[in-house]
Length: 259
Image 1 (tube, one colour):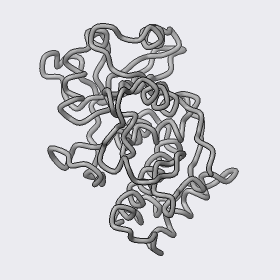
Image 2: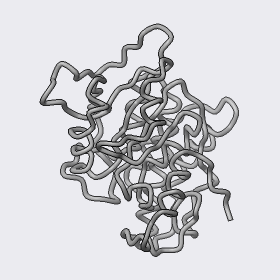
Image 3: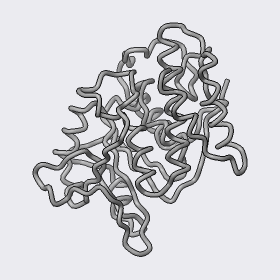
Image 4: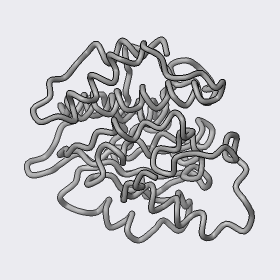
């Protein structure tokens, strides 16, 4: 049995399960899975999970049941960047005190990551510009798109922060849930884009590779299709990143798109 990574999303998931009054019945929730990577046992990917450090931080605001879903990709961010990822359940009127303390921490410069800001277009930016001594803290709204819009519009404690709009060149490869349109990326894909915008290229690529492997194997597990040779470039790229001084491998990103 693989050890479950000790990071913010997994701790939140454990706590959320502890307060549940009935079993969680998400799609795929009854399937036996590796507790560490949430993939079916025969498709476990723990061996290739990368773990890095970055200057950028992530604050995940997760809709109520999101930490419980095996398809959740916010967890992948914490897998890769456990030291600088925080996770909280979203509360409209009573945000967690630790969340408010993080947002007010002078070491961080928060950005709400969201594709648009119709009510206050002056808040919208496509660049990360930091004040001296500040590090970027990217606030991700982790849920379905209707839930994310609700969190964005009904969280007054986020109103004072700039809104970072990410416009990736590639469309989403996320097939585990149906988005309203192809341009809508999942949480991990957004985080990978944001890391590159912030100049954290290695962390961004590591996260994209880890997401690609998770997505490919999650979908393969749904139809009982064994991992194939088409994974080889992706696994090699992850091994390179995990190794000391490993080179970044663009082929790993491209090679998994068709999985």
